[in-house]
Length: 360
Length: 104
Image (cartoon, rainbow over all chains, first blue to last red; front, side, top):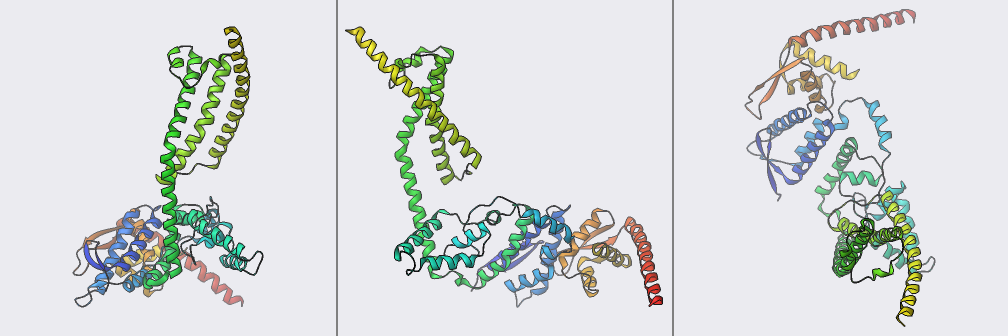
């Protein structure tokens, strides 16, 4: 028994098996990607849809009412995959070399995996052969070598952690950046077409996932959930601290503003937590210190919030340059802050001593 | 080169009589000019956009309505130009072959 869909292809309704539908859908979107640069792309794809619809009609009659996977496969063979369309091949080759360059990112490879696709992803990242890495891993985890079971456990743990931490390459774009290829229209098209055979295999044999894989996936998803839950709890616990830090940040900002404009004594007085009388040196150093204070407190807050958002709300990760700049800024601010702290600390002691002596 | 050939052949087929895309495919396949049908559709659209071809929708007894392609006057002119170019090319090649044969 199979589930069927109703589709409208070129104005005619067809019953189509679920697996056949998925393949056809992939094929058509692949065509769309292939022709996207061409003038009148929509029309070309529409023409081809009409032709496919025609071919379906020829195959169906009263006895055979449903379009099957074999039908779609044969029709795709007849129509041809985008690479088979006669194009200027020399140009393609040139582009292919350019396509090699792109930003590489570490992903787990879902298309070639024994357990979680960690080895496969690492192999793709470094451009090595998967089998070599797998064999290495097995040899390393053999209990006879090195420190015996300890090493084995370590590798097992590392693998599980890698499985949890490294994201799976789900979209075509992610699969491309896993291999370090440029994410562009042609490459995405290629990936989708390469997926054809994979899709077929997967659909024809339901049991491609081994028991170990299923078990592993279950464990990983549970662990992932637990980690995320822990993060949420941590975030909730951190909220009061965050709030205090924000208040400090705000007051420092106010001090800086106040010193610059020499205006609101009001704000000076309204900050009861900090004994501002300590800061009685030149306004320049006060401003500088306030700024460094803001940076020292603010950058971790921003980082933490950004981390939370990128984990839960799908924000993009910060680029390496941004991270480095923030880190350097923070270090400088920390240095300046400590310097002033020591200075002010000294002057504060002096101050209290003098006031004390006056009091006598 | 091959692509130009295909365009020439399509125009040639349509010169004699207007046809459906499926008919053109059939004839081109018989002549072993194309392997997969997908090659034809972008070509037809390109020729149509260059105003060499035109089409009208024709209802079909079975399946969706089909495009019935025919040459435009521009297409006829273009085909004549191609014809001459082709003859010239063929003459050159034949000439070369003949002289080769004489030599060997």
